[in-house]
Length: 305
Ligand code: CP
Ligand code: NVA
Image (tube, rainbow, N blue to C red; front, side, top):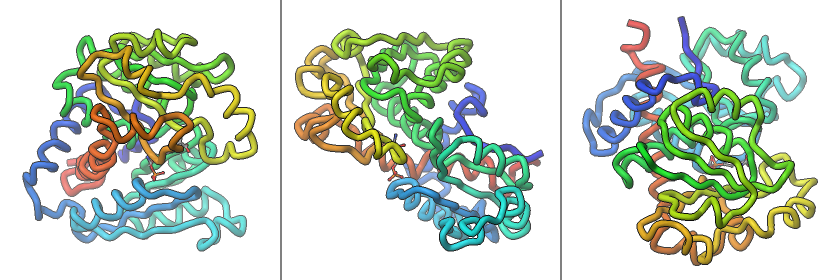
């Protein structure tokens, strides 16, 4: 039976740990030139803009020997009203897997139900699992282990925050989220993540979250699709900026993470984003390695055998 990757929770802790190990191997060049996607075409259906996700998937598919096929709704009949279900069934006849970036998470779920080939979530309003898989790889590289680690997320309880909740539940670290009232992560995701291995705390005060943290993480205050709330959000989040004062509360060797793109001067200052604690470029690079490990496992020749 095909498997999808719509959220981090779709993978067990063991599966996540083994993908991280494999991604670290691939980054070192192990098995370079092996082509587990030879003869396979992988779709990339993007309903929102992307730099990292699109390019890292296209390059990753090429490096694994496959062919990426990039599509936007405006260029295919989906944009003219062809149903998600019909699109998924037809594309399944050509493609061996598909990465989708979309608005409502339900669109992904609907696509996955009708698709005969694995569906990978390249970001929805609710989850960003490929990002956080790469983030886990980055944390593993920089910190060695997840046990006892304190990760502080400062800002909006958005798709990245939801995937971090699931990461805490699976990898078993302490996740403290500081967000304004009304901007908490998704309640159902939170409840499910709390059944896992980690410890999850939601509070209001950024300094309290940052205190003695090993990892400081933030993301934009205005996600794609929320542009009509820009001013309201800027006001609501202005005390949630990841700046040098906040970094001062964390451990001396704390790392600073951001999925990018950043709105410099809003959720994070230039000094922090470009400063000595920042690992954001490693994070961005690791998208490539983590997604190659994911595709090799989910879509590669050994899959299902
Ligand atoms: N972090 C991330 O997903 O970036 P893009 O929107 O550029 O793909
Ligand atoms: N939360 C952001 C992440 C972008 C990679 C968004 O959804 O726009």
